[in-house]
Image (cartoon, rainbow, N blue to C red; front, side):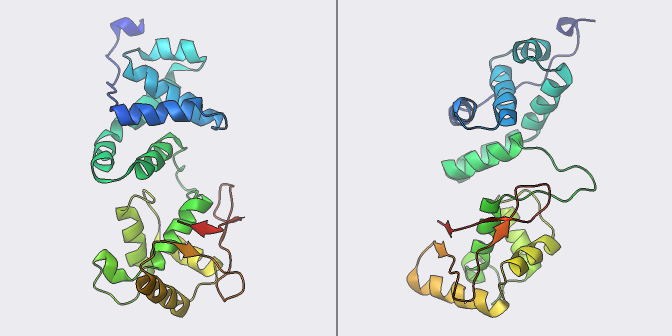
Length: 217
């Protein structure tokens, strides 16, 4: 049976801002191919094309079109909320997380070096700035906060502890950094190689390990 006689595909309706960001991702010279293909699927779906037409135009299988159309549709409400409450940088980050591979069952999640830096940056803020009724961050509170801020969609308490441990952060060092940031009124974290706070390393592989963070701003 042809698709024209089958069930109507999931409707995709992009805001102007979402469409602009996707077009930038697709047209950017150094975008990974998977981002280009998946972003193109969403853009073509937004223009009303059916799954088989998109598959034919991009030279891919129809199940792949269905999968990424479905994933975008499932994220529609969260996209609307982020667009309304956050800035363009947060929206772009979330859109790219939608286009990224979903973690496979039983496999550890992949966290980019940038996101690991942002997680540790939150740990360097006084918890009261986030309306947390605690004087020092716990791994559980920190995991909850970075999910709330949409830095990651999910993260285990164990992973948070692993990132801080790999960066050789102690509770005392984090508390001192938080106090320094509060006095300076700065949203910036600088990583010092000789002052007891090392460069945080994270890998670009399937597990959390290795590329350095120089500065988070």
